Image (cartoon, rainbow, N blue to C red):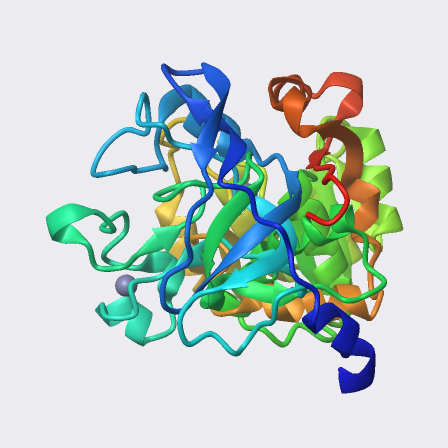
Length: 382
Ligand SMILES: [Zn+2]
Ligand SMILES: [Zn+2]
């Protein structure tokens, strides 16, 4: 970054109001727009003015059922809790001791700031923090997960630990920057199955947002072949635009046979993003012996798995939780270099006042919505 060109941003000050508009969760599926005090950043924190936020399937889960959100030790209902976690914005105020970021910096956020004191955080696995949700009263260990265990982003301002921030490249739009954390999740999945996928074959099962970003990231990391499987042709077509060498529509083709054909005998890796009940068994059958599966989706019910097939073929299986190990920064770097066009998955935009409509579009996939983004407007000088 050039100090001369940054200077005007750094000297900028922002008028921060005392209250802000925020959506809060009442009973399940009940959101209300209220006024809340603008929060104050503490040590190692900044106040982010939210400029855009994408809707995630997990937001819909939280608003409908509660988990994986855990707010003040329990379900997030009727606690003045603001959901939303895939946001980006502008740093407008620094907490004590913060010099890693400056007022005026455009940042995107990842969800988890671990507690920094448990066994997993100390290993860098902060998305698997053992003190999840312990951030209040007597049990406060400093854990934060935006929109899960602390207030999230369907509002105008949010507090963020600096560990959760990544700079947004200057020529990247607000809308695109909200997608970095999704690409970061896919990146983390590829990290845990081996990381260096250049020249190796990767099957991505399920063309949802994480799967589609997985295609872009795998291709950018040099994987060949990259194969995307799914049930909807238009999503598979989008996967091709993001770099998939092959796509397989599982309603029409034998997915295992096709993968074996395209990879000359079996794939090296599967990134499972579909949550389909047959996914693990299919994945095990389409891999080479010694292949690896990363599970990044939640099936809605427990599913039977052919364990003997896993054992016989020395198949490794991994689960990932969130966007760990700073994968978000690596995904942001690939997007800054325009190695894949994440913008393709952004389909709809709504203002803050229309969050319930934005959620409905995402839930019901109205007009084939994939990523629905809520974009804020700010009065001049704010
Ligand atoms: Zn999400
Ligand atoms: Zn921890």
